[in-house]
Image (cartoon, rainbow, N blue to C red):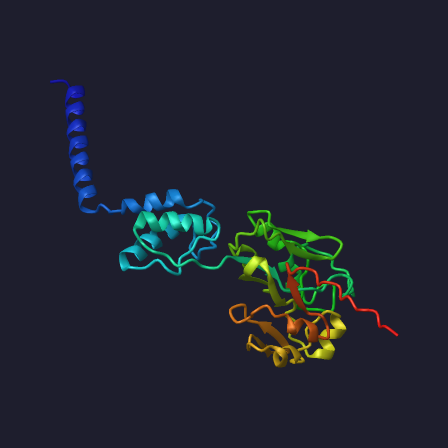
Amino acid sequence: MSYILIAVIVLGAIGLIAALVLFAASKKFAVYEDPRIAQVSELLPGANCGGCGFAGCGGMADALVKGADAGSIDGLSCPVGGAAVMGQVADLLGMAIANGEPKVAVVRCNGTCEYRQKIAEYVGLRTCAAIHACGAGETACGYGCLGCGDCVEACQFDAIRINAEKGIVEVDEEKCVACGACTKACPRNIIELRKKGPKGRRVYVSCVNRDKGAVSMKACKASCIGCGKCVKTCPFGAITTGNNVSYIDPDKCRLCRKCVDVCPTHAIVTVNFPAPKPVVRKEETV
């Protein structure tokens, strides 16, 4: 028998033994994956934005299946797919799911160029994170929007843009899916996810300045001064004041807008309300 034939037989035997070992190992250490996870993943939009609280759609699918096995998937929601996708997921898993109210990103800063003048010129890396790390930035307000667009870069849905005229960012609520990427990107935490509200109507304090009234007004004329007038006026207990700034709880607010009328600095913003009807006065008769 030639050496070549012996070598072929030996190598064949080694390959056969290795194949048997690998087969036995694959059976012993096999990891079972619920086929429903793949089915749920196909229903999810695949944006992998992280808005659901998981690293990607795969993690969300796994959590949904585990939640279904535990008896509830309430609290789990895909902001991109919305109610339509979550309804399909619930049907697939044979679960009922509570309909959550849609949310939208809100920029809590009204410090436009008109109200917040530049006092310095920043030269360096033009990002919000870099400017914030250096201090207050180009204005006296160390809390407001820096307008460099870190949130714009983070948004995968083209829902945020920089208003060059005003110097701050704006959210397109028609495109916003409330994924939360912009809230994580903002170094000053001025972007908040809030309920869209009935007919898209919202009332909120567009300021996060925690300086005392005189200091905040010097930095921005549209700043909340924490005077508490809105707190006293609200009949629903929806407004609180702390650290020299007020906050409106969207769960308690009934959109009466009484707070808007008493705010001395117009820091409370209303969205999507109809324009007030003109008051018609009857002419006095002599």
